[in-house]
Length: 280
Image 1 (cartoon, one colour):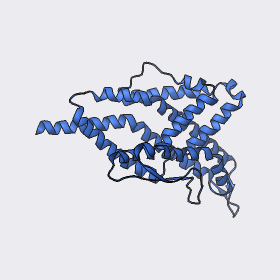
Image 2 (cartoon, rainbow, N blue to C red):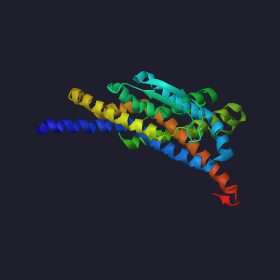
Image 3 (cartoon, rainbow, N blue to C red):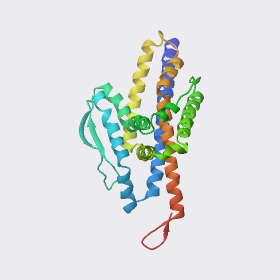
Image 4 (cartoon, rainbow, N blue to C red):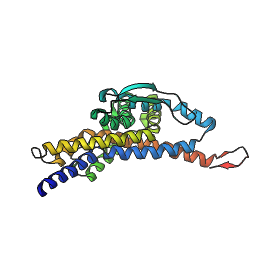
Protein backbone atom coordinates (compact mmCIF):
# COMPACT_ATOMS: atom_id res chain seq x y z
CA UNK A 1 0.00 0.00 0.00
CA UNK A 2 2.84 2.37 0.90
CA UNK A 3 4.59 1.63 -2.38
CA UNK A 4 1.40 2.23 -4.33
CA UNK A 5 0.85 5.55 -2.56
CA UNK A 6 4.41 6.61 -3.29
CA UNK A 7 3.99 5.63 -6.94
CA UNK A 8 0.85 7.80 -7.23
CA UNK A 9 2.52 10.71 -5.43
CA UNK A 10 5.65 10.50 -7.58
CA UNK A 11 3.46 10.47 -10.68
CA UNK A 12 1.67 13.60 -9.47
CA UNK A 13 4.97 15.35 -8.76
CA UNK A 14 6.42 14.43 -12.14
CA UNK A 15 3.29 15.58 -14.01
CA UNK A 16 3.37 18.92 -12.20
CA UNK A 17 7.07 19.26 -13.10
CA UNK A 18 6.47 18.34 -16.73
CA UNK A 19 3.55 20.74 -17.24
CA UNK A 20 5.15 23.54 -15.27
CA UNK A 21 8.39 23.16 -17.18
CA UNK A 22 6.70 23.20 -20.59
CA UNK A 23 3.89 25.70 -20.03
CA UNK A 24 5.09 27.69 -17.03
CA UNK A 25 6.79 30.33 -19.21
CA UNK A 26 3.60 30.72 -21.23
CA UNK A 27 1.58 31.49 -18.09
CA UNK A 28 4.22 33.91 -16.83
CA UNK A 29 4.28 35.75 -20.16
CA UNK A 30 0.48 35.88 -20.05
CA UNK A 31 0.63 37.69 -16.70
CA UNK A 32 3.38 39.99 -17.98
CA UNK A 33 1.40 41.03 -21.05
CA UNK A 34 -1.68 41.50 -18.86
CA UNK A 35 0.24 43.99 -16.69
CA UNK A 36 1.79 45.78 -19.66
CA UNK A 37 -1.48 46.06 -21.56
CA UNK A 38 -3.30 47.37 -18.49
CA UNK A 39 -0.61 50.00 -17.96
CA UNK A 40 -0.80 51.09 -21.60
CA UNK A 41 -4.59 51.32 -21.47
CA UNK A 42 -4.36 53.57 -18.41
CA UNK A 43 -1.74 55.75 -20.09
CA UNK A 44 -3.84 56.12 -23.23
CA UNK A 45 -7.04 56.78 -21.31
CA UNK A 46 -10.42 57.30 -22.92
CA UNK A 47 -11.91 59.89 -25.21
CA UNK A 48 -10.49 60.54 -28.65
CA UNK A 49 -7.06 59.19 -27.68
CA UNK A 50 -8.63 55.89 -26.69
CA UNK A 51 -10.58 55.67 -29.95
CA UNK A 52 -7.50 56.39 -32.02
CA UNK A 53 -5.52 53.81 -30.06
CA UNK A 54 -8.17 51.14 -30.63
CA UNK A 55 -8.17 51.64 -34.38
CA UNK A 56 -4.41 51.98 -34.70
CA UNK A 57 -3.86 48.66 -32.93
CA UNK A 58 -6.69 46.85 -34.74
CA UNK A 59 -4.31 44.25 -36.30
CA UNK A 60 -3.41 43.08 -32.82
CA UNK A 61 -7.06 42.78 -31.81
CA UNK A 62 -7.77 40.68 -34.89
CA UNK A 63 -4.84 38.37 -34.13
CA UNK A 64 -6.11 38.05 -30.54
CA UNK A 65 -9.56 36.84 -31.57
CA UNK A 66 -8.18 34.66 -34.35
CA UNK A 67 -5.91 33.04 -31.76
CA UNK A 68 -8.99 31.94 -29.82
CA UNK A 69 -10.85 30.76 -32.91
CA UNK A 70 -8.03 28.78 -34.48
CA UNK A 71 -7.88 26.37 -31.52
CA UNK A 72 -11.64 25.75 -31.38
CA UNK A 73 -11.87 23.32 -34.30
CA UNK A 74 -9.09 20.83 -33.40
CA UNK A 75 -10.53 20.48 -29.90
CA UNK A 76 -14.12 19.92 -30.98
CA UNK A 77 -15.52 23.34 -30.08
CA UNK A 78 -18.31 24.81 -32.14
CA UNK A 79 -17.93 28.51 -32.95
CA UNK A 80 -21.32 30.10 -32.34
CA UNK A 81 -20.31 33.67 -33.13
CA UNK A 82 -17.10 35.40 -34.06
CA UNK A 83 -16.29 39.09 -34.36
CA UNK A 84 -12.65 39.78 -35.10
CA UNK A 85 -12.88 43.52 -34.53
CA UNK A 86 -15.88 45.22 -33.01
CA UNK A 87 -14.96 47.64 -30.21
CA UNK A 88 -17.53 48.16 -27.47
CA UNK A 89 -17.95 50.74 -24.73
CA UNK A 90 -17.10 48.01 -22.19
CA UNK A 91 -13.58 47.76 -23.61
CA UNK A 92 -13.91 44.54 -25.60
CA UNK A 93 -12.34 44.59 -29.06
CA UNK A 94 -14.04 41.49 -30.44
CA UNK A 95 -15.36 38.14 -29.34
CA UNK A 96 -15.36 34.43 -30.07
CA UNK A 97 -18.35 32.60 -28.62
CA UNK A 98 -17.89 28.84 -28.67
CA UNK A 99 -19.43 25.75 -27.12
CA UNK A 100 -18.53 22.09 -26.65
CA UNK A 101 -19.88 18.82 -25.36
CA UNK A 102 -19.49 18.77 -21.58
CA UNK A 103 -18.75 15.02 -21.65
CA UNK A 104 -15.81 15.36 -24.02
CA UNK A 105 -12.52 15.53 -22.02
CA UNK A 106 -10.56 16.48 -25.16
CA UNK A 107 -12.76 19.57 -25.51
CA UNK A 108 -12.07 20.47 -21.87
CA UNK A 109 -8.32 20.21 -22.50
CA UNK A 110 -8.87 22.54 -25.44
CA UNK A 111 -10.03 25.26 -23.05
CA UNK A 112 -6.39 25.75 -22.05
CA UNK A 113 -5.19 26.23 -25.61
CA UNK A 114 -8.21 28.30 -26.65
CA UNK A 115 -7.78 30.57 -23.63
CA UNK A 116 -4.08 31.08 -24.34
CA UNK A 117 -4.59 31.09 -28.11
CA UNK A 118 -3.66 34.79 -28.53
CA UNK A 119 -0.23 34.07 -27.04
CA UNK A 120 0.38 31.08 -29.32
CA UNK A 121 -0.79 32.77 -32.51
CA UNK A 122 0.74 36.14 -31.56
CA UNK A 123 4.18 34.60 -31.11
CA UNK A 124 3.97 32.66 -34.37
CA UNK A 125 2.67 35.73 -36.24
CA UNK A 126 5.53 37.93 -35.03
CA UNK A 127 8.05 35.22 -35.95
CA UNK A 128 6.59 35.05 -39.46
CA UNK A 129 6.44 38.83 -39.80
CA UNK A 130 10.08 39.07 -38.77
CA UNK A 131 11.01 36.59 -41.48
CA UNK A 132 8.97 38.40 -44.15
CA UNK A 133 9.67 42.04 -43.29
CA UNK A 134 13.22 41.81 -41.99
CA UNK A 135 14.49 39.76 -44.90
CA UNK A 136 14.95 36.60 -42.86
CA UNK A 137 17.85 38.12 -40.92
CA UNK A 138 15.99 38.41 -37.62
CA UNK A 139 14.94 34.75 -37.22
CA UNK A 140 18.49 33.69 -38.16
CA UNK A 141 19.77 35.80 -35.28
CA UNK A 142 17.84 33.58 -32.88
CA UNK A 143 20.27 30.71 -32.70
CA UNK A 144 21.83 29.08 -29.72
CA UNK A 145 24.03 26.16 -28.86
CA UNK A 146 25.11 24.24 -25.80
CA UNK A 147 21.99 25.05 -23.83
CA UNK A 148 21.45 23.29 -20.53
CA UNK A 149 17.67 22.92 -20.51
CA UNK A 150 17.44 20.50 -17.60
CA UNK A 151 16.28 23.17 -15.14
CA UNK A 152 14.54 26.55 -14.98
CA UNK A 153 17.75 28.56 -14.86
CA UNK A 154 18.94 27.00 -18.11
CA UNK A 155 15.59 27.64 -19.79
CA UNK A 156 15.50 31.31 -18.86
CA UNK A 157 19.15 31.75 -19.76
CA UNK A 158 18.44 30.36 -23.23
CA UNK A 159 15.37 32.61 -23.58
CA UNK A 160 17.47 35.59 -22.51
CA UNK A 161 20.25 34.81 -24.99
CA UNK A 162 17.82 34.44 -27.88
CA UNK A 163 15.92 37.58 -26.93
CA UNK A 164 19.15 39.58 -26.70
CA UNK A 165 20.16 38.29 -30.13
CA UNK A 166 16.81 39.30 -31.59
CA UNK A 167 17.01 42.78 -30.07
CA UNK A 168 20.59 43.15 -31.25
CA UNK A 169 19.40 42.37 -34.77
CA UNK A 170 17.16 45.46 -34.61
CA UNK A 171 19.94 47.79 -33.48
CA UNK A 172 21.67 47.95 -36.84
CA UNK A 173 21.09 51.48 -38.16
CA UNK A 174 21.19 50.35 -41.78
CA UNK A 175 18.11 48.23 -41.13
CA UNK A 176 15.91 51.28 -40.56
CA UNK A 177 16.59 52.97 -43.88
CA UNK A 178 13.80 50.87 -45.43
CA UNK A 179 10.06 50.80 -44.67
CA UNK A 180 9.58 47.04 -43.87
CA UNK A 181 11.30 47.18 -40.45
CA UNK A 182 9.09 50.11 -39.43
CA UNK A 183 6.00 48.19 -40.55
CA UNK A 184 7.23 45.16 -38.59
CA UNK A 185 7.70 47.30 -35.48
CA UNK A 186 4.17 48.69 -35.81
CA UNK A 187 2.60 45.24 -36.25
CA UNK A 188 4.68 43.65 -33.47
CA UNK A 189 3.70 46.35 -30.96
CA UNK A 190 0.04 46.20 -32.08
CA UNK A 191 0.02 42.46 -31.49
CA UNK A 192 1.93 42.75 -28.22
CA UNK A 193 -0.51 45.26 -26.78
CA UNK A 194 -3.36 42.79 -27.36
CA UNK A 195 -1.65 39.65 -26.06
CA UNK A 196 -3.37 40.25 -22.74
CA UNK A 197 -5.90 37.65 -21.62
CA UNK A 198 -9.31 38.70 -20.34
CA UNK A 199 -10.96 37.28 -17.21
CA UNK A 200 -12.95 34.73 -19.28
CA UNK A 201 -9.69 33.78 -21.02
CA UNK A 202 -7.98 33.13 -17.69
CA UNK A 203 -10.99 31.17 -16.44
CA UNK A 204 -10.95 28.92 -19.51
CA UNK A 205 -7.19 28.56 -19.27
CA UNK A 206 -7.39 27.42 -15.64
CA UNK A 207 -10.18 24.94 -16.33
CA UNK A 208 -8.37 23.49 -19.30
CA UNK A 209 -5.08 23.30 -17.45
CA UNK A 210 -6.64 21.35 -14.57
CA UNK A 211 -8.12 18.80 -16.97
CA UNK A 212 -4.84 18.63 -18.88
CA UNK A 213 -2.95 18.08 -15.62
CA UNK A 214 -5.30 15.28 -14.62
CA UNK A 215 -4.91 13.64 -18.03
CA UNK A 216 -1.12 13.85 -17.92
CA UNK A 217 -1.12 12.42 -14.40
CA UNK A 218 -3.23 9.40 -15.39
CA UNK A 219 -1.07 8.90 -18.49
CA UNK A 220 2.14 8.96 -16.46
CA UNK A 221 0.70 6.53 -13.94
CA UNK A 222 0.16 4.11 -16.81
CA UNK A 223 3.53 4.47 -18.54
CA UNK A 224 6.13 5.91 -16.15
CA UNK A 225 7.25 2.46 -15.00
CA UNK A 226 8.10 1.68 -18.62
CA UNK A 227 9.57 5.08 -19.58
CA UNK A 228 11.21 6.75 -16.57
CA UNK A 229 12.99 10.09 -16.68
CA UNK A 230 10.60 13.04 -16.80
CA UNK A 231 13.51 15.49 -16.84
CA UNK A 232 14.57 14.09 -20.21
CA UNK A 233 11.02 14.31 -21.55
CA UNK A 234 10.68 17.89 -20.37
CA UNK A 235 14.05 18.93 -21.82
CA UNK A 236 13.12 17.51 -25.20
CA UNK A 237 9.77 19.28 -25.12
CA UNK A 238 11.17 22.65 -24.10
CA UNK A 239 13.63 22.57 -27.02
CA UNK A 240 10.61 22.79 -29.33
CA UNK A 241 9.21 25.77 -27.40
CA UNK A 242 12.32 27.73 -26.45
CA UNK A 243 12.43 29.95 -29.56
CA UNK A 244 8.71 30.56 -29.32
CA UNK A 245 9.12 31.79 -25.75
CA UNK A 246 12.03 33.94 -26.88
CA UNK A 247 9.72 35.60 -29.42
CA UNK A 248 7.24 36.33 -26.62
CA UNK A 249 10.07 37.81 -24.52
CA UNK A 250 11.18 39.89 -27.50
CA UNK A 251 7.59 41.12 -27.99
CA UNK A 252 7.34 41.95 -24.29
CA UNK A 253 10.48 44.11 -24.62
CA UNK A 254 8.95 46.01 -27.55
CA UNK A 255 5.67 46.44 -25.69
CA UNK A 256 7.48 47.67 -22.59
CA UNK A 257 9.40 50.15 -24.73
CA UNK A 258 6.13 51.41 -26.18
CA UNK A 259 4.65 51.77 -22.69
CA UNK A 260 7.70 53.72 -21.49
CA UNK A 261 7.41 56.00 -24.52
CA UNK A 262 3.76 56.71 -23.68
CA UNK A 263 4.68 57.30 -20.05
CA UNK A 264 7.34 59.81 -21.11
CA UNK A 265 4.91 61.63 -23.38
CA UNK A 266 2.32 61.80 -20.61
CA UNK A 267 4.95 63.23 -18.27
CA UNK A 268 6.02 65.87 -20.79
CA UNK A 269 2.54 66.72 -22.06
CA UNK A 270 0.01 66.06 -19.29
CA UNK A 271 -3.61 66.17 -20.31
CA UNK A 272 -6.17 68.41 -18.68
CA UNK A 273 -9.66 67.56 -17.52
CA UNK A 274 -12.76 69.65 -18.11
CA UNK A 275 -11.86 71.90 -15.18
CA UNK A 276 -8.44 72.68 -16.60
CA UNK A 277 -6.58 70.56 -14.04
CA UNK A 278 -3.69 68.39 -15.15
CA UNK A 279 -4.32 64.63 -15.34
CA UNK A 280 -1.47 62.23 -14.54
